[in-house]
Image (cartoon, rainbow, N blue to C red; front, side):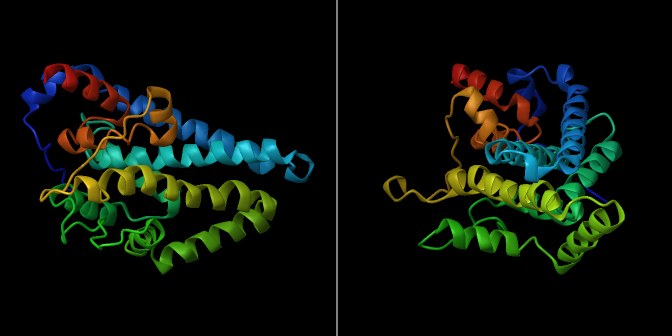
Length: 258
């Protein structure tokens, strides 16, 4: 059974920044929109004739589908913090389970436990997402990051579903590779780069004894486009129960309160 940990700060401090009552029901609506856009786009792209579509248009469709896959993972991530539907924790976690399973056949329970270790011990040997080496090379860190979460069961799941979609439902193998297999892989790079590597890597010129959790100060539109405002990472660690779409507001109001 999934245990929902409390936020790192008191609810009164959260209310100081946000009207929490106003966002209770909005999370499930946001999640529904992401799910709906993902399934509609996937069906359209799988049914299209990619060989008769210009490459620039197909590439834009690939990027769009990648962005929606990232939204699925962010939805699951918010569910781990109880932010999708706080009124009903069971439904909240079921949404998270479905989202992360669709994303890459991941175990929600496994991700949940490791993610909360990351929040409890960021930048330490107990943090499963951190690569505490002198040379924090992006690709080496990414490989270690994915290796700790990936399983053979996932790979077999991909192969099985791919063959069902191809041979039973008669979807083109090229379309499946381009719009179903590649987007979650690209999304994993996007999530890792903006959600782990940039906010948590060591900066030699600003090295301190305490592990820094940085915010990526992108303009609002680019913050959303880059990774659903996940670049507001200091704010996320400070207020982990705040949904992704409220992080910019936390950042702005927190700055004014200082």
